[in-house]
Each structure stands twice: as C-alpha cells, then as structure tokens.
Amino acid sequence: MEITQARLKELFIYDPETGHFTRRVKVSNQHAGTIAGGVNNSGYVMLRIDGKRCMAHRAAWLYMTGEWPVNEIDHINRNGFDNRFANLRDVTHLANLHNRSSGKAEAAEPHVYWDGRKGGRWWGCFTFCGKSHYTGSSRDKATAQKMLQDKVTAFYTALPPVQTPS
Image 1 (tube, rainbow, N blue to C red):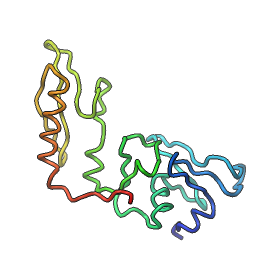
Image 2 (tube, rainbow, N blue to C red; image 1 turned 90 degrees about the vertical axis):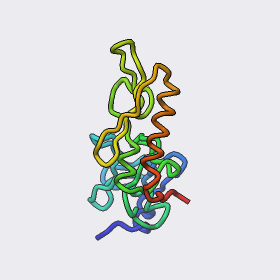
Image 3 (cartoon, helix red, strand yellow; image 1 turned 30 degrees about the horizontal axis):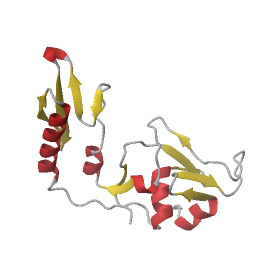
C-alpha cells in the first residue's frame, strides 16, 4: 500500500519553515508532539510510516503538493538534513548530480578548490555526463568562480527546466 498525503497528514504535522515532521499520534515509544525521524548514514532524515521507511524530503514533497515527486528531490543548499520546503525541488537525476559539492575537504566553494602546490591557485571543476571538466585556474578566487560559472552555464543550458515548489 502506497503512502498517501491523507495518511501522512493523519500521522504528522509538517512545518515547511523548519522542515520538521512532528508526530500527531503516539506510535510505539514515540510520543505525539515529538519531532519524527532519524538521520541515516548519508545524512538524510528518514521517517517510518506504517512500518515503511521513507525519506523525509520526499514525504515533505507529498505533504505539500499531494503528489510524489516525479524525479529526485534536490536539497538546493546541499544539506540533506534541511527539509524546508523552499529548499526542495523536483529535478532530474542529472540536475541533482550537478548540485553536489566537490567532496574535497579543501573546497571553499562548490567545485572551486584551492591547490596549494606550485605557488597555489584556485581551480574550477565540474562533472557533466560522468566526465570531469576543468575550467582553468587563477590566483584570484573570484576569477576562478567566474570561469567556472561561465563554463557550467554553457554546458547546462541544454538541460530541461526543473520543477520548483510553487
């Protein structure tokens, strides 16, 4: 049985300003009025609804729109714990992959990172269709960011528009 918006609203109150789900009813040792969910190993909030695990960001989309997302739910600010409705959007897998941090500990900006070797330079890099693209380097961070933005814009203008909360 698929979870419906009506069932979700029966069990929880969702606050779109905080992104939190609060229990309406006591289930097992979880009392009504408490914040629902726990964080999984990937940093996403998970809910248990009628014995089924459900990612809170997908449940938030259902709660607010009445429909399950068509594609993937992207956390615009890349924080999987931040389920405020304004931070969520229904996007293609490719668009969701684009909105990821570089994963480098030294990254100061998304996809722009500092390489301290050979005098130190800021580098821009992004992935498109599984291939890494380097946008060049600069001693100036703002210039590296501009080079990155220009190249990313050129690659991603062909993507279909994303659905955002209305």
